[in-house]
Image 1 (cartoon, rainbow, N blue to C red):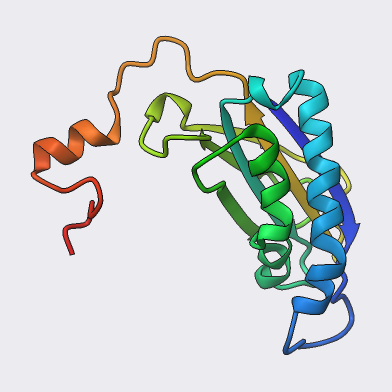
Image 2 (cartoon, rainbow, N blue to C red):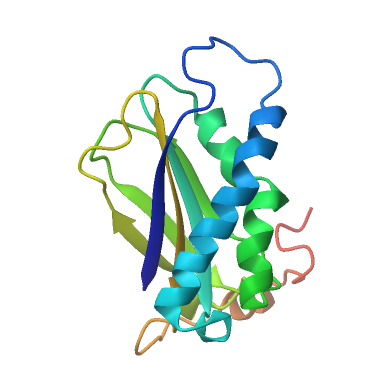
Length: 172
């Protein structure tokens, strides 16, 4: 498993409630997505080696969870990774708020099949001095395989047994 992490100053720090986060998202997220994607690809040996992937962000205690999620929940961030690894599924994610050295959890899932449980993995890490109160920690995670000896089946077996449609798993 691989994680690439960046610590940055919260672009909304000290501004109070900001009605529209989009301008700072557009200024920050594309470059951040490209940087972290390049780091993951270098460690993995290329996008074709990546099987599982995910993303996470944690804002420091002076920020809002919306500040963390704003940077990672834009296609201008995630599409760098998605396209580089040839993925079809969405990026699993967490976005939280916490102090320095808090545990950042990056959930992973299969890049092409959201129901393939062998690739439901989590990278757990912390940065000793981040996020500071006015910082955001942003990370991308990857795996070059699934869990060894996977034995729990996939979502499709459960759906079939429960009489649910794969296209409408909640039966609503």
